[in-house]
Length: 152
View (cartoon, rainbow, N blue to C red):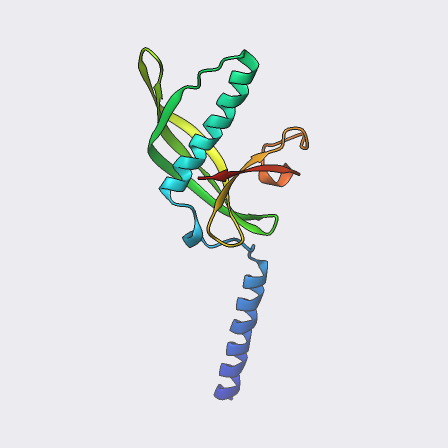
């Protein structure tokens, strides 16, 4: 009787573990998340994209040099976008602007970026919600299209 009870108990535990595993979402491992240098390069890439749009709109030809420093990551959320491991990373950084006549430092700038590891695992891409394709970009679930940029 005791032997049969042990088997029933074991079967129940195995079924419970299988059920709990099936309920959990499929997310990429945090061990494959981008490092600090990739995150800094992605922030710089995003700043460059913004600067390029502004210089075009303002008809300004001289770009500003800048440096991203003191990176502090506060959240790292793994997810899949287009079947590729993607990480939503947020936190703060310090921006040092090098202007023609002075240097300006801005501390505790907040960032929230999406970084996607490519299939071969050698490169990363910065994902930016496509404003023309999606009405609301509050969360990843509401975004229907992304624009991606190589992070170097």
